[in-house]
Image (cartoon, rainbow, N blue to C red):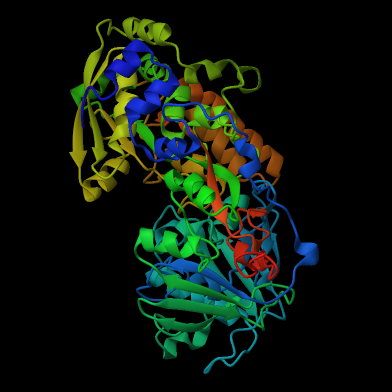
Length: 602
């Protein structure tokens, strides 16, 4: 990394416009060049380029082939892959989508028509739908899903599942599941070791389990190779697969919801080269394509018929974790709360976000954009109302100040901790991370007195560093899961980071007194573990808010500053895009308007 990469920018407090130019060629910077943001002001109304997401379900028509791209799947086993085969399989539950907003963290049945916790929260009973059927393929032949299939699926996941240690006591002593059984053909029962209401519900969804939900496969799967033969009860059925050419899915006519999906088939072309995919999309041979941010506006200008949407917040989802091990002399400063506060306050979050997401330039160009700050959560957390906004100091509370850039106060805090002249520290991160992002952070902190010596490591070393539970040296920039294999429940995510008793590999390793004994914080323990057994959603949300306010002062972690919404493109033929948010089954609610481009040229 170029150690003086941002020194002049930060020391001179250059304008954001100049700072972006110095950042030079970042994805968003190139995007703005297309806006006229490089060298000349373009004051034309760019907001007219945007299409507002609209629910058109009331006039949806069934039919059509949805043309998209996919990676070439290695196999179709839904318990060990994220390659799209999960379209063919059902889950017991799914996250309830948000309608034109982020989901609220509640769940709804899929193969299960209902679920119920016992009063003590230790028994979870699912009642299966009578009309959930498998694909009409031998040897299953379209029969109804029954509880024996659920038992078979969960036993298989217990044996081979990617995140089985997060679920089963037989694999990990800290996992929540003690046992599961099928009292009758339509009933499936789970016994838990401790109550975790919303947390466990989230784990069986595709948003939980690191994306690997507990997908239901037929018990007959023991007689065929599930890696090559796809038989599920989900909304889509595999129609054909030509390696390196395309994967085609057709609507499952036996899916329990007879109104969905709207589309007849999803034709997923294997297009490994970005330039080729962009060309095919621009020519109308694809209805959707993940156009890079630096190409979005230029592509829209080249093909005016495309719809451009402002979509959800994106950020790096990275954090800085501190070394707590008292056996490492270099870690002593980080065990002092004042030092961690000084580090956080040395960061100019608005400038950092503007640098990598170009918020001010989008705004100057007439496009709506806004900086979102991270707290203990990443700014892109996909749940409505969970992330507090420290930019609003009145609503967040007095501890919001520890997220605001205050270089003078940062220097005072360091001096009070005994580091008037600052100190040197090791900064460790894997080489595949964006070193420009880290360079900007470190140069900002350098102004307060933090002098970092970078240490690049491999992906394998990074995993050990991430899961060191506070035994890393100095600081480590890592991608520690939040909405993750712990499930997508925000409260459970906080438990895995901040509870020493939960014994998660993601625990940060801190202690409240800075002794370096990894004992945690009793206030957080009591707050989080009490809330874990709380069934009331608002009370769980209130506990998550309290964690954010408390950790803002303690700074047991410091997240990368945040992010901003992105812009995406779709052909007008695609209706209901970006309407049902946070839904792993969102492709079921899309429909194709045959009167729109590129199908109709008018």
